[in-house]
Image: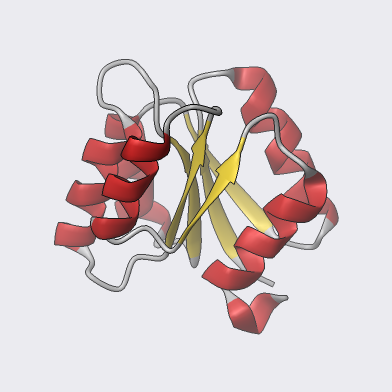
Length: 121
């Protein structure tokens, strides 16, 4: 299966998403903010990234832009709360492949990962 980087400042959300992906057979790497996500991305070279938009230190949108600059082939889906449509549009224009609305629906997360890593679904 695939290596997926899960980025969220809320440990509960990271663990919930990581458990779901691990049960699907994926290897999961976690990060708590955008700066940490960039470091983990460079270390682990994941097949896909699920990243929260709103985080302290460096938000997901800024981390997305840095990751895409570092690796234009980076496959990233953004996670967002309801009401952040303008940010989602900016994320998609900046190279995000998909987005998942919180709270997570297991089937929606699986569909996003299938978009990120078609060979692993």
